[in-house]
Length: 106
Image 1 (cartoon, rainbow, N blue to C red):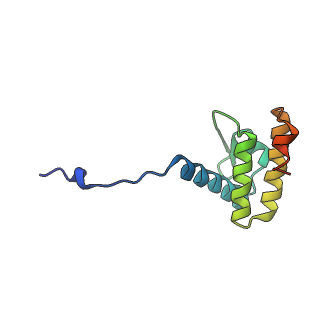
Image 2 (cartoon, helix red, strand yellow):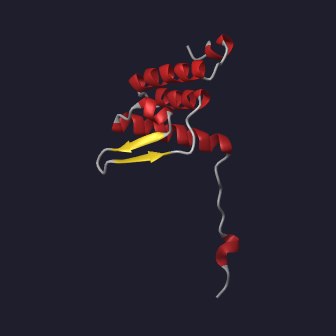
Image 3 (cartoon, rainbow, N blue to C red):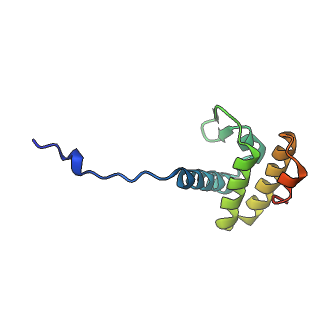
């Protein structure tokens, strides 16, 4: 039996593509399951069907939340875009970001 793995080609996404995909996935979760955006920012996703909380090892940063907000805008989830952008501003202020950092978010 010949090893056919040598001819198997896999194209992994770039870091930028992976981040964009993850942001879009979180925007979809927020849109379709109406997740609490503060819980999402804190790294917690609630499965209301099975009553399970899935917790990440870290919170979403303000920069992460901006990426999710932009993904929501791109998908035309406009209510979610506003909610996520407001949460990104809140997170940026909590992180002690300067007004220069905050101005593009506004």
